Amino acid sequence: MEERQRELAEQEKRLKRNMSRITHKIAVISGKGGVGKSTVAANLAMAFAANGYVDRVGILDVDIHGPCVPKLLGVKGRRYQVSPLGLGALPIIGPMGIKVVSMDFLLQSQETPVIWRGPLKMQVIRQFLADFLWGELEFLFIDVPPGTGDEALSVMQLIPEMDGTVIVTIPSEVSEDVVKKAVGFSRQMEIPIIGVVENMSGFTCPNCGATINILGTGGGKRISENLNVPFLGKIPIDPKICEEGDKGIPFVVGHMNSPAAKAFTEVVTNVEAFLKASHARELTHRRGR
Amino acid sequence: MEERQRELAEQEKRLKRNMSRITHKIAVISGKGGVGKSTVAANLAMAFAANGYVDRVGILDVDIHGPCVPKLLGVKGRRYQVSPLGLGALPIIGPMGIKVVSMDFLLQSQETPVIWRGPLKMQVIRQFLADFLWGELEFLFIDVPPGTGDEALSVMQLIPEMDGTVIVTIPSEVSEDVVKKAVGFSRQMEIPIIGVVENMSGFTCPNCGATINILGTGGGKRISENLNVPFLGKIPIDPKICEEGDKGIPFVVGHMNSPAAKAFTEVVTNVEAFLKASHARELTHRRGR
Image (tube, rainbow over all chains, first blue to last red; front, side, top):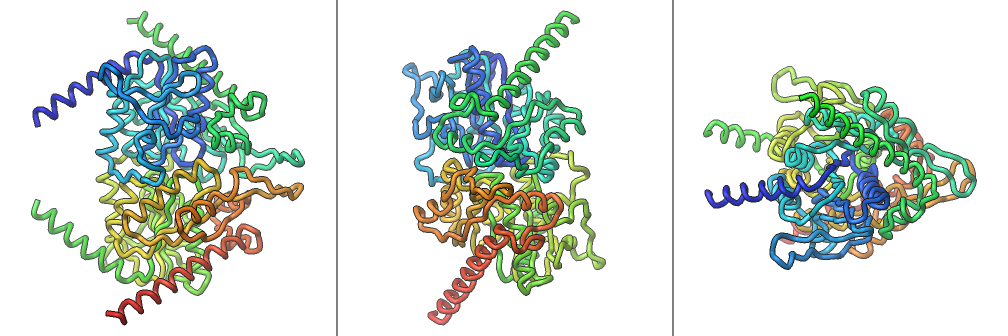
């Protein structure tokens, strides 16, 4: 028992050291699944890497049961290696030097479901943060599985210094109710809300050019106004996003001129602005003390 | 401690008695969120109720963090009442006498996130099954949150006599990998797989009539063939499904002649055929003994 406690304390130290070497940690969350949260996280990582931070971006996929990030970044099927000095495991290196850690790289086969209860999940998340050699990074994006259960709680408790949350939603009203919970969650956890992204917002028919609001429209913006949180932008539905996702090419890179990629650039700009403002606030705060 | 154990044993008895009065229990699951699992569950419940089982269908929404079923059935905002005799809580009565139990009816406000770890969730799921007066039912549909974690495990362990699982997916390849896990989960839990539903399969532009495969196509069918599980049918994307969902009108009822509703009828027929065949197998099995 004593040994176990010592081990945990050691791990906690490694976790703190690891995290202290990463300037910004951003959690990408959603109240509801299937809103494209992993797609947004992967594209955020790519956009920041492409924007002057090659080799300085990491992405942690905390979805234990259905990890998607490796596929979206085209590194599916790879296996972790342990560092030559035995200091820890090495993240998988994705496009533009993005460091990727995901349950997916540990699975024997695609059919293997990870049938785990909460405590075991907390343990593996702790390992992802403490026992991988993340190195010096400017940004770590954390793809947190939907809901406000074990995984989300663990992440927020393990990284209390999180810069903030990016909340991804789709425009339907049903989702609106659920995203309110994500806002409530961030507030209860006292993590700043960077803002809301409305994904899958409207669809332009590639045949006739008509725009159809398959999932309704404006839900994300409405929520932002009602709950008084920043709105980061809306990303239209684009069959290419899905196709390219299936091929492992994030659309911000594969189709830089598509309306979706352009819309995404706005999101990136807004996230950057938040980080800058929050950095400025911190400096003022420090000077004030 | 002894008191707590006695209480648990009593609850277990109530749970068994409750479940023994429900002929068919069907879990609607998915590896991934946002594939329309709750929409499929709500429409299955409606279709069966409309098909000769008014007042004989129940739906249990096991999604603790983002319950959607009440909104989809138009009963959002209602509150549970305790039975006059103090025997238990009464499910909310939805359209066509569908009995609905969901975390949603317990929440103070839409903003309230349920920030709970696994053990607490197991407890509330046990209560949903044991302490509500479900009565005599022909069908209970259980909307299980995505993934193979605490909620899914709890449901399968608490109802070992489950008729089977309906696995909902969308056609993209990324989802294909995740649905394989749902199949693996059912198999490991030794719960029969009723089959796979491919949701959001193709979109017909209401303006020009062109069919666009927004999320790819055929993924559900491909998985079924590869993994040797029945394919129950595919349901096209229909903006009305979402609109009506937002209004609390399941589309099988609101738009019976739409391609989506017709496609859904095929799914219902296939589920019925499974239940009949499995009933026949059971009779043969009993005679054989």
